[in-house]
Length: 333
Image 1 (spheres, rainbow, N blue to C red):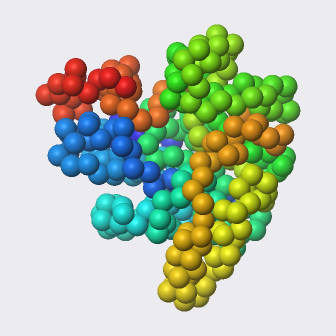
Image 2 (image 1 turned 60 degrees about the vertical axis):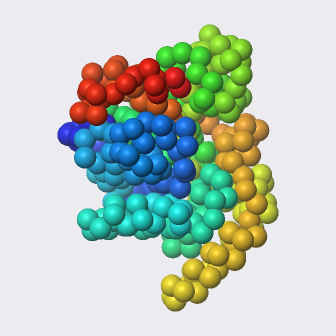
């Protein structure tokens, strides 16, 4: 998410995916979380406890809409899949009332981020078996949107040339944050257009304070949870690390009858275990895991009130609600 005025889209990098690879690049936007830690701020600003991705904290667009609009100049909306939850249908219906022409997958139950990723990956594979997928959480604040999406395209180019890798986008840390995942880069395995791609030597999901200090001192990267991989690599990761969940989701066959597909989704989710993608797939640091460092830009995961306030201050933004905001009541992260 950035300021209401969308950043001018930068020219595509000279080294990018081939025309065929770009035609096979899909976006998955994750919009199924509840955002409980941000509820004090949402309640104060909007007067309700809606999930944070449906809240407009900068300008008039929600976090979800900022994310979709950020992706649109690079990946067309007919290859963009938004994954949400049945409990959010009231909010997501309002988002789609403006005529957004993209795909919406509604999960009947909450089975964690692993299902939120693997379900759309299987759905895309049924339609485009050679697809490459870029995954985007819907609660990120990004000022330099064009620069960010240029880097996503460069990573997609690398994945199109080296399809065995799952490439995370790592951000340069500003402190020993314990609420982010941390990535220790290993040996270089290649380059995007502008920077190296490293094998992941080790991954920590929300480490202790001591570990976070060690990671920060060691020059490790924050995990943005934005990543790019082929559907084949992601499904193989599901088979290896989440076999029961992956098997359940693989049984959802595409159906010409919408009701038939809906029934299959209901059955799959009823049988699926809950799992966290970071802890199940990233934390073991599998040999196909790589990382590419983002260029210098303003990025933040808006998970807590304190982080929202801190980021707005650093970016020099002051939405109307901030002027009347009682900072001490919600500023603790």
